[in-house]
Image (cartoon, rainbow, N blue to C red; front, side, top):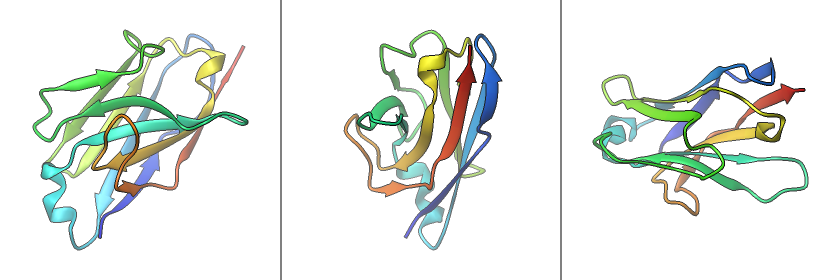
Length: 121
């Protein structure tokens, strides 16, 4: 079983930056490097939305059109972590951000509890 814990959310003004981190643990955390990892978000009244994905080796990344050029996903397999650097934040980026392991564009096998990101205008 893989447990994921997100951190780094908060309140920021439009145009600002935040860095989210997701730490994996558990008995199967030792296999973290084999999982594609992703970030998703869900705003109030909205469906869960794909944000970014990174493959197991870290050399392939995918982004939603809405965040391309602004967000960067990365991973550190030695530390069992994945990060999402968010720059040039917009109010429409406001959402709860979730980390997923075994991620595709549609979802994942394991999920964190989420971290709130609020962007004020």
